[in-house]
Image 1 (cartoon, rainbow, N blue to C red):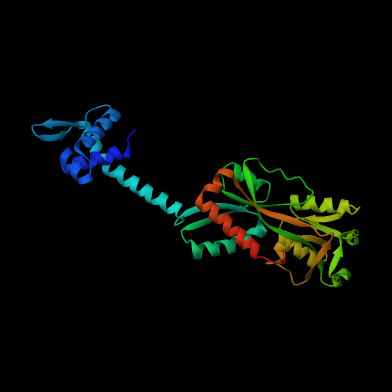
Image 2: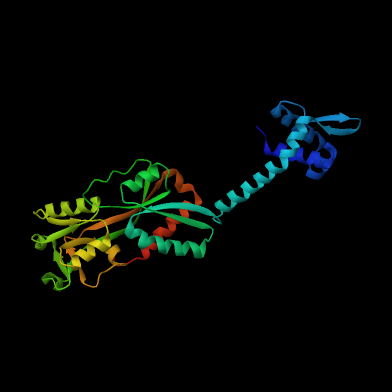
Length: 301
């Protein structure tokens, strides 16, 4: 309804007491002040000033607007300052939804970097597995989703999301310490066809079943859980063997479990997903850059 420039000029006219005094204060000509006040009166639909002799006097509408002008201009100044801080990366909030092993590895390192270099930019962490985490981005419930995909398996990525690849994560086989194959540096998947297995989350399980089918057998799955600690505890107890990404083993490794590379080698792709339009938001772009740097620094995964 109001042009903020006109409102600022109105505020100065009220403070200075006349058009000419406001013109001197603001560096305008008096006709420019007059034109702005006429435009403001057209916007509100009623006069804001009347003349009493040589003095200008506020109308009832002018008095009402004057009471609110200070608050409106202060709020505009605050909004400009906040928006400027966001644009200059002095402040900002980015909501990230990540799967558990990314939450335990990539996210803490990213938070540490942001805290040191951009203390005003804050991450809010949510946990979720794909594809549900990607749907949260589409619904606007988070800004970035960290998710993973497997080669050879269809991953339904919403068209409005951009993918930023972060790293490849090598899969390993977990064996109980003392297992006869633990002496090898790597283990072929088909050599484990007679083992009992502990399977993981739905997406990981689908990849595992696909890999076994490629090697010509159907695995005997004794237990299914997406809790990495439970998987390792079951392997340590001799309940079965399991496939696990190296990213998990970088922060969690049971003392009675041995990890070995599995052949044929399989790597899952870890990526960040974000609305394409949000790539232009400074804080979101910054967090993506930090995540890429953190992922690139992780070797051996």
